[in-house]
Length: 553
Image (cartoon, rainbow, N blue to C red; front, top):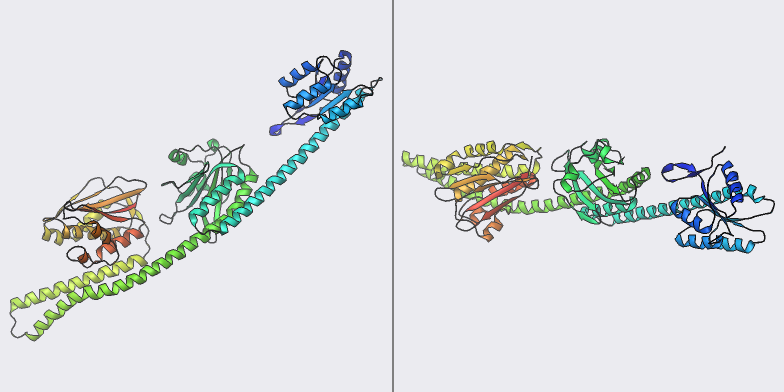
């Protein structure tokens, strides 16, 4: 026996199930026998009321309804069924000469009708009619599915076109990232998305730039992945897209991000973002609203990622050009200030050196040995001062030009090296320096940071109390940053003085009593190059705390 099957959801196939409503029991048996031989599963109801109740309790693929039944006739059954929703394929069985009833049944949604004849020929026709209405339904469904697929394709193309236009209208990286995430979630019907880009400060790390979830954007703090870590890390490592239908069973998925954000990821898509010179980062789409992600979703996201990556590349290039232009402007301004400062700061010690040399030249025969030693000492001090100024100028220029690799640092050892360099100043000022225990580890470049500590400690001893009492410490890491500081016991600084401290080439003599104005400029440039920040906290009469931050190791 051939079994006629119906395609159900999830790819399953089951035999066709028919509900026949027929009050003639003998005829019902014949119908059941004929239909079962054709491969159908058949249930019977002897009246319209029973048929409606059975339809409510079970699922049927086809209805065959007789017009003349107790309780409700066939047309009334159709009327009641249509109030509940679309009918399955339905065949109306009418008596001879009941074409009017058949037409009314078709208006109510019946698929076809069959007229009973006295010799029972309709029994042979019914399986064929049922097969035809099922074929008709299948054709209609396929047509509807094709139309829906075409509509979705047109919507996707329109959205991709909209995205392409949006990507070309802005060169703002944040705005571009937010637009990309919105488009991506709309395109595949997802709940959230995120963009991961390579970290310029720490090469080899992916940093989450923007997260989009349920219509809200936010920039998370310190969400970082190594290549190969998590699905995004895997995509970055192998530079290919992937679908994760169930994160619980995929070993590539890392719970770290969900734990940090409180988000619950169930499924995701990850695709690489390729720029002109290689991989820029990764685009992730998470938690499909209906069902799970499939190959079509991956294809759509890859199609979106291509122009998005070009736009991101363009935006970053423009940002770099703007930054370069700003740096050039700042450098020109600094060169002007630099020329004035060098002329001013070298003029003093050079004039002193020349003056003592002239005295010695004019009075060489009459000058006493003691006066000779004093003059030579003054010349030596002026020469050393000029040497220090020149060395600091060279360091200041070198920091701008030199690129270094940051590494984890033991800050206590660097602080001790700086104190050893300042041994003479410590002795001259009788300074007391306390270093707090448990210095956190931070990322940086040791030779440069030694210069930072030398400048901070030297200033604190010069402008601290009498004698200077300094405390060197660090705060607990926060948001991936460590803050180090030096607290002095000096007179403190006004708000106006604090604003001028880290302005390049501002003379400390304009703020305090003396100095050549390069120390804090060096500190500012070094820490900026190491992706940190500088600052000061001060209250008049309570001393000052000079600080800087670095990325946590």
